[in-house]
Length: 215
Image (cartoon, rainbow, N blue to C red; front, side, top):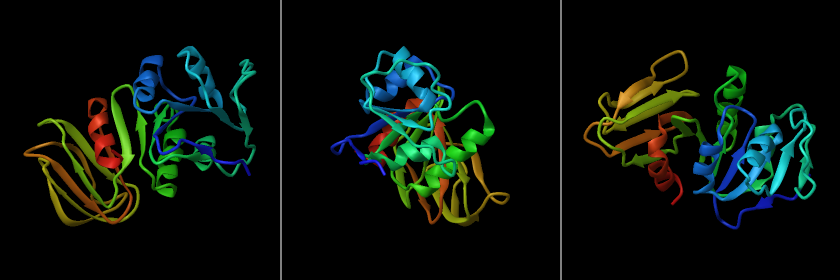
């Protein structure tokens, strides 16, 4: 078992080997400068010229990168994804993730599953959107007409307000009632959920999400 990597109360950026760009990683690092690479995500970190506190994973996709001064935490357990391993060794109150969405659908599903198991504020970024698990109560200040979607990862009682299609004491579940393709109307957006609900919205709303979940 590795000693947790301490962030001293500050948010951390994790970078994985999925779809991502130097520009997107820099957006995350501007808000969470401590960087931990997850296996092959070290290549994007190097491309961005970013200093890594550590590289975590089973190292099956790290290739021949030269990382002589970086802490390497080899975690070969195949019962956990590299993303889950990185979360386990990261002691931080809030986490931004680049390179965990896009590409293979099974990798994205695994990332969403990890959010259910670790209820810290974890915000996953793509070039156009952010995704995170709603806490029991959530208030978001977003521009009028901003797109927003709510998708239940498990059965939940759900309330929403400040959106075009609000719900009240509704039972949502995968394969049942969902609330995607919604938009902000007469915000702020207010949500209550008893179970895991995935929220997605434009990348431009990242700072509003950070403010709501952590700051």
